[in-house]
Image (cartoon, rainbow, N blue to C red; front, top):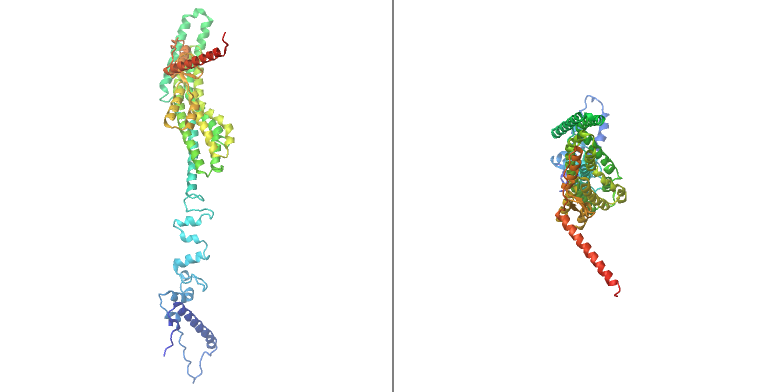
Length: 500
C-alpha cells in the first residue's frame, strides 16, 4: 500500500507546505549520508558477486503539488533560483519575509514599502501621485496647490507675480523708453513740418537780405543784421533736423533715470513694494494683498492717462519745432524758442514729480497696507503732473478725470485723492480776480501764439478780456459772500457802539 502524501493531508495549504518542507529536509539528509558510502565502493565488483542494485531516485515532493498554485512556486523557489537562465531567475525569498507569498509587481511594491527597496515612490512613477510622494515632507496639501498654504498660498504667489508685472507696467507708462514722436528727421511724419520750417527760414533770410541791400546806406547796422540773420538761419536749419534725435535721446535718458531712481532698489517706492511682497509681516494676509493690488490697479489707470497726455504733447511739440526755430532767421530772437523749450522740457520731466515720495518710502517699509497709502499719494501726484506739466489742456484733462471719478464712485477716499490732484479752479479769459484761477486752453495757446508772432515780427491783436460762464458765476458768488461778510461786520460794529 502506497504511503499517504503528507502534503495532501489536511485542507490547509500552509500545513501541507510545511509537511512537504520537512519531508524534503529528511530526504536531503538521507542523501547526504548515502553519498560518502557510495563514493567509497570499489569501481568494479569481483566475479561471482551480483551487481549492486541501482537505487531509485527519490521523488520530488514539490511535484505532488498543483503546478499552478503559489505553494508549488514557493516549494520550487530554490531550484528555480539555481537552475535556468540567471537573467530570468527569481530572487530568493526569505522565510521571514512577509511578502514571500506575493508575486510580480505586488511583491516588489511590498518589498519597497517594508524598506527593502531604494525609494518607495518609484512604484508611482508615471502617475500624478509621484510628485506628491517625492516632494518635501514639510509641505502640506495635494500637489499643485502652491505649498504649505494649499490653494491660498498658490493664489498668493499668483497675486505677487501679477503685482510685479503691474509695477513694471506702471514704470513703463509713466516714463516710457520710446516716444510717439519721430526719431529721425527723415521720418515721413516729420518731413512735411521740416520742409515747411526750412523754406520758411530761407524765405525770412531772403527778406532780410533784400531789406539790408535796400538800406545798405545805413552801413554797419545793416551789415550786422545780415550777418546775424545768416548765422541764425544756418543754426535754425541744422536744429530742425536734429530736434527728433535730441528729443529721443532726452526721453530715453529721462526714462532710464526715472527707472534707476524710482524703481531700481529697495530704497524707492516700487522697490519697497516689491520687497514687502516677499518679506513684509502681512505678506500672507489676503486682505493686505488685496489692498496693495487694488492700489496698483488704480495707479495703472492714472499712469495710462499720464502716458497718453505726455506722448501726445511730446509729439505736438516736436512737430512744432521747425516753425518755432524758423523765427530765429529774422535776427536771433530767442523768446519763442525759450517758451517752446520750457513747455517741452516741463512735459518730459513731469514724471520726476513722483520722486517726492522717495524720502517716505523707508517709513512704509515692512507693511503692504502702508505701502498702499503711498501709492494713493502717487496717484494724486500723477494727476498733478497732468495738471501742471501738460501745457494748455493739462488742467482741463485733470479736471475731467476728477469729474469722471466723482461720478463713478461714492468713495470719500477716491474723491479726496482726485481733488488733491485736480484742485477747484476756474478758467479765466482776463486778469485773475482770485488766486485759484487758470487760463482757458484757448487763451493759453493765444498767449504763446502771440510770443511766436512777435518773434516773427508780426503784431498780433490782443484777445478781448472776458470771463467764462463758470468764472462769472464763481466771481458773482464770491462778491456776494464778500458783501454779506462786510454787512455783518458793519452791523456788529453799530450794535457795539454806545447810543448818543
